[in-house]
Image (tube, rainbow, N blue to C red; front, side, top):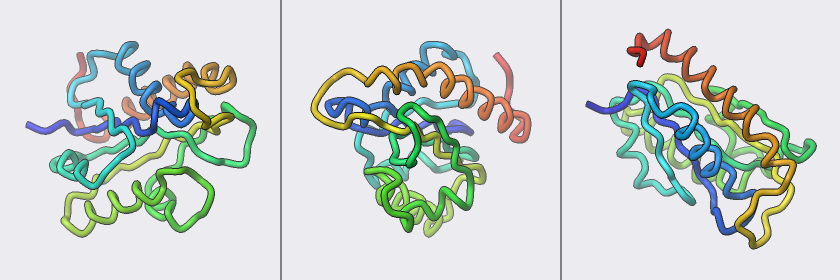
Length: 163
């Protein structure tokens, strides 16, 4: 049976803060390894082939670096309808168009998750490098907690089991 909630980390780990979605996913998986009906998925630089993962899923949480126009390390959660139209807004994230494409194909095929959220972290550096900037690294605990709280909130609505 498919997971009810997919947590999808995206980004390029070779481009410093651009890889924060994948690093955040790793952090979440380490801190909360036993969340029933939750699947952690490393989407890398994202592609439409990820749409198959959305079948029978009620919740999608995308983790990514973004241009929020705020201080580096700022964490912002963008929900539902606002997330659905992200591709129309310029400058949010290098992956926005691909996120919009994924959501569009899922809506077109009838597999759009009922609950959707983008957890975005303002990047500082997206040049070549394997390490996150200090500001983004320091944002990981706060972002991890926000994601966990969102999963718990959705789990209550979706009736998921507890560990």
